[in-house]
Length: 503
Image (cartoon, rainbow, N blue to C red; front, side, top):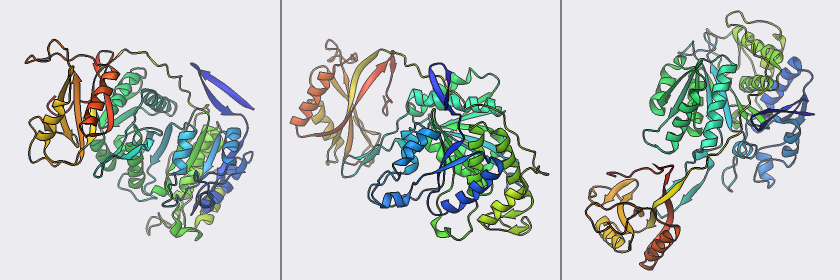
């Protein structure tokens, strides 16, 4: 039975059953999963576990997705998965299971709450309690890469407005639901003005709809530094994909251990919960691994499923266990810990403390709620004008002046070669002879008004797609290899491309 909850025009699935998909994973995965499932049976005995296979053994028997065929059917039925860490074999073109699941299922939001457990787990930041909300599908993690010349490879950074709107609205809704008072956006839009600039712009737009929550923006480099130095000054941080991946590990480590943090991957029709650490094959099968991260992921799963009471019971039992100094090897420390235990024994200790309330830490409770709902994206139709093109060519020469003169001669009527850059640095006209150049050249051509092209201050004008094809053909006939093109647009009367040096 599946209930459809509507907000706007977008359906959000909330599964009425209690069945969850369980993927033990690789390395330490089966051990920590067994420990976590035993605890789940104690706090939520109504749960039904549907085991599925993912990871290294699936890869090695020839399935390059790393996912058994049953995974998709089970996920369609349950909408929820608890997943252990995965080992991706090196070589052979294998894709990450995590990336495959996130993108196939549209799991756009990655949520990682991290808090301090001081003084029971040593940390320099006893008051930190921060949530990292990370866009989970786009950015450089789109994984679109090419080697374009002998010297140069590229990775495309894709940021979309619907992607920005979904993750930023989710961050504010999460903050409102869980009582977070401050949402900080981190980007690098002082450099990447179009991609990160869009993320920042959408953040500012959506923040106006949440006047009860403080909103602010930081450049990611200083933001990451402050998260490492003063994490207690942050409440909730929302970022594009790559930055969020990095800073969520930073805050987990400064809290005491990456082994203590769980992670939620949330989509409109499915959700996957996991620890943030890897498969640690070096300690697999030795009863050494800390299952706390996967147990924290189980807490997130229970709240997502609307089982707030069970989530609170599990969370409080974990806190009492840590307070009692019952620690696995990764966090055990003389003077802080009372008993060194293995994976199985740690689970036993948590189960024995279900129903107890922590003494040092505040008792945990969660709101009874359904999954956060996001309105459907509505695309606006905006007028576009094609104003020019960046032609990227492979040329093994090293004289930008010579190249510029040849390319100017091939421009033809209605075109002007405005500049040539190499690795983003202008080398023509008036380049610096000290600039190091590779075999990858960006040649920016812009359209000219035919009546002004011979004047000292010509007027730029729109061009047509066929004009670009004609220009490309002239370059080809002259012996140049065009390896890619990027159209230069004005959208709704605004420049929709980054300026080059000196423009």
